[in-house]
Length: 283
View 1 (cartoon, rainbow, N blue to C red):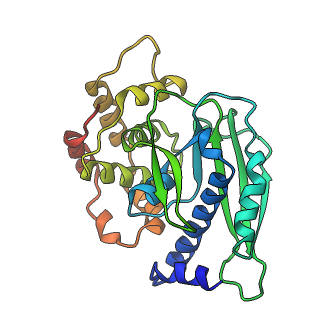
View 2 (cartoon, helix red, strand yellow; view 1 turned 90 degrees about the vertical axis):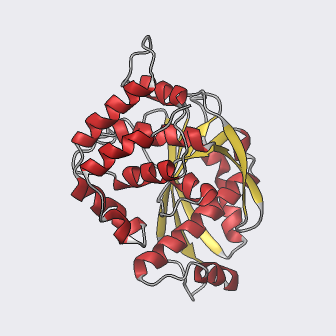
């Protein structure tokens, strides 16, 4: 328990939201260690906002754990790794409840990103001891069993709860996935400001989009004709059309709880995001 408290103290949380974000991130890393213990990363790659956060230094928090199989496999079962995750938490005197969510019909807002060929489960955590330092935390773990392929991976180290290695998509491929989400996610009343925040993070570090992988994702989600090539101009045309549809106020509201410096989003506007297109690179 002292180890867990020391990990939390390193975040120096100043309010309850920051404290919750810190605890959730620690839980995410323990889950990753359990998956590594079960050799999960021989079959899958880590991607998404949490991968960008814990492996590449994105300066915002993230909620869920997203993975892509390295080869399509509709029979893959994430619950095969349940025992390894449970054991990892047990070593820290924590108990987890892992359950697979029964598939249901998703709305148009979710349909492109919670696919029938995804394997996903929920993890709840609670302390075994009475001196609780963790609230009830729920994390969704999702594995794409029939993923768009053509992405590159690299091995990245994590240091908590001990040093271990994770198979992750490279930054260029992570950016391709983020650009796909930014351009094609069905919003409704759920604009993901996180997508736009991450976009600016990639651009500020001069990271390019893997255009080939982006195209493959767009084809498999039904947003691009498989017989049609794609170039940077095509990408930027899609981007400007998307910016014209953006509700900046809703985007700010979404990202606010995941960041500590809110001044960074005060300058957000459609004009800013249109101008940002000049700095988007592709490989």
